Amino acid sequence: MISQTENYRWIEDWIRIPDSPLAKERGRTHGVAVSATGNILIFHQADPALLVYAPNGELLDGWGHYPGAHSLTLVEEDGKEYLWLTDEMARSVTKTTLTGEVVQVLEPPEHQCYADQAYIPTWVAVNERRFGGNDEIWVADGYGASLVHRFDREGRWIQTLDGEEGAGRFRCPHGISIVRRRNQAELYITDRANQRVQVYDLEGRFLRVFGEGFLTSPCAITQLEDRLLIPELKARLTLLDAEDRLLDQIGRHDEICEENNWPNNRALVRPEKFNSPHDAAADVNGNLYVVEWIIGGRVTKLERTG
Image (tube, rainbow, N blue to C red):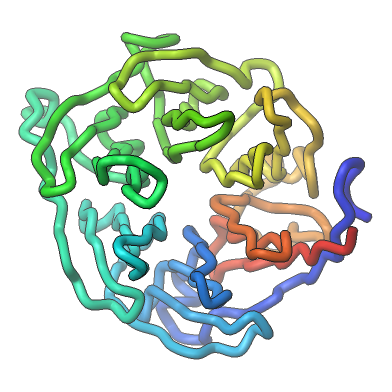
């Protein structure tokens, strides 16, 4: 038991990414998703960038050159799954099949801020039709101008949020997700440097803010039925209840963040403690897969036991 509210078996280094010079130099494991077949997809900064693992940890496939592999978002259209991939070095947003065929490239918006600021996308969320949405695409520019952009399904720019219409100007809106609970859909934005999450409706209207006081570095949002799991870069997973209140912090290791060369000093990594969680995904059995921002990568499986 590694949590006060959940029972998991911690499986250290559930998989290791393929050994290559680029994996040793970079190799940060930034994104993770679980396909309908149960395969686990890992997006990391090496070649090939997208790795496909079976539930037993066997490497099945690898493809794609994305030197700044950052996030992947799995969507479904007419019964077929696709991935939206962001690359922080190429500054690109790309939609592919699960085998790597590129089907759409989202161009940067022609926004006035980019006259003197960079566009460095970090995450994608899609208002999927299978859930009653319209396939509009939301993109977080977390590492550039700290904006969130809204596009139609064809990639035409509609709207930009900067946080001023909400709780205040974004500072690294790193991860975004459309959360569906209580028969409504809302856009969650991890305003990481402000240590909070801002919530909007899908027309871009601000609804509320939370997390100030208990979040330190929210990276992404993973929905677990009516609860939410937030990987935090500063060494923890934070679990929220259905009202976005703090339930638990899993694998918490705050003190490691004060050490020299954190997060890339592997000598600091401890079993059953997180180092730098960046994304998380759950399978149909409630098992969690957590990827971390550390050179060489780190993928942990939390196997649900109760």
